Image 1: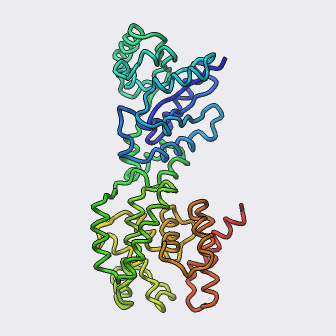
Image 2: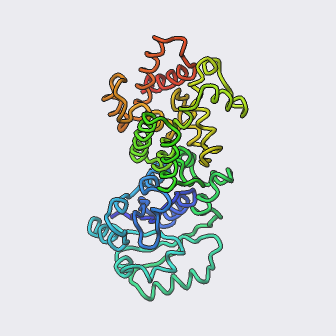
Image 3: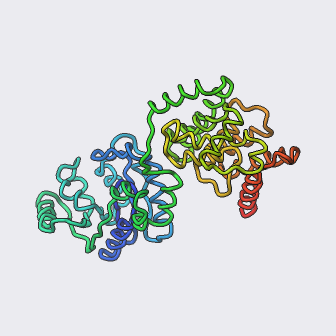
Length: 397
């Protein structure tokens, strides 16, 4: 007979206190394993307004991947409708009738437990373990435990855990403004948040898309505008696939060529007036500056201040070593949007875009370098450096 802990929550994001609570329960109650039950659509929280369910699931997966007694339960993510706990623990009971199940929850959940849907079924099937939170009124917690014991079957026990000051809401609010807050999540989770641009203070709506679409229609030549729509839509699709905020990617796609249809003289002038570095190859071929000028135009002309968008636009033609996720999405979308038909092996590259993004980037760079080798005076050193970087990644596989 196994002793199984189930720690339910939205984990938006999962942080070090969640891991500490799970380990405290493991040790105190001699559990064999603790599963993090990632809430899909809980009746008491609107998780969809923040980030995608898959983002939360992936962060939990990263947080527990090297913890042998911690694991992940993703059933509620894929369950249709509201994720009621009584359904989950009925499933646990039916699948593990001889095991002891322990449901780990925060003290806030305990105090509201009597108002949950069918709490009597939950308490019949599990022992409830309560984790205190910083600032808790211990008398109120003890009263809540006593009240639940009198109202329901099963045991209600307090985890011996000293809470700290961190909360998921604080991490969401201060992750980018207070870098010290990143110490409260694992390094892998922190990297994931940055890579996927989660909890950014910048968010975009359909109104932004309509506004920028109108501005691009007026700013660009008709053929360039059609290309831009193709890139924006492809960027959205790739973002959905790779769990990046899709409307943010769509905004970047709409603006990626916003400086394409101005004169070379204008591009040079913008760079010189705003201290934007110009390489020798860019001075010789000023059309190559449209990425850098476009990045500048994001905030100066179009009121888009997200640095990931600006960076993706600045490198969307040359790439750069170790591109972030949005960089790769825009770089690839620009190359494979539906209007493209002249590049070699497009079918292979388009397939790779939705199965292996790094491979796709490498294939594009390989073809780009082959083309540039035939036109050596147009070679941008950044493209060569980027190609070598991703070639090295492929060789290490």
